[in-house]
Amino acid sequence: MALTIPVNKFDIEVYAAAKFFTTNKKLPSTVLGQPASSVTQKPFYSLTLHNVYNINDKIWVSFDAAARTGGETSKNSIAQDDAQTVLGLGGSMNYSPTVHHKIGLSYISNAAGDENSPNGSIYALKYSYIFGGGIDKTLKELKNK
Image (cartoon, rainbow, N blue to C red; front, side, top):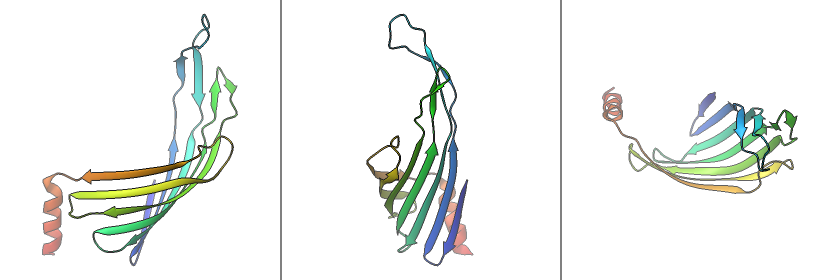
């Protein structure tokens, strides 16, 4: 679920999500002669906030915050006490030289979390090409209005 609120040159974006898992009934045993294990995992729930500043029609930057909780696993119905709660903070930048090409750079790092949360940072460089004649047609129609 997502919500975007435009305010002048800013866009405030909020995303809420849940990630669900199915049971893995065939996890191989690491001990010779032992039967396969059954592993289940509880859902992860997350909330992400992007505070986007639109510099112009080609460049935007954002401050990003993301929180996630849950995900405890159970092996053969025995809880592993490994649920996670983590808060990440970072930022993003996007440059769109044309309507079809987008280049993005983002960074997020663990700002707080419990003993089971992942630790570290993620850097990402992204390129997107948007194809299809429909976008060109839509842009021409918007210009003509």
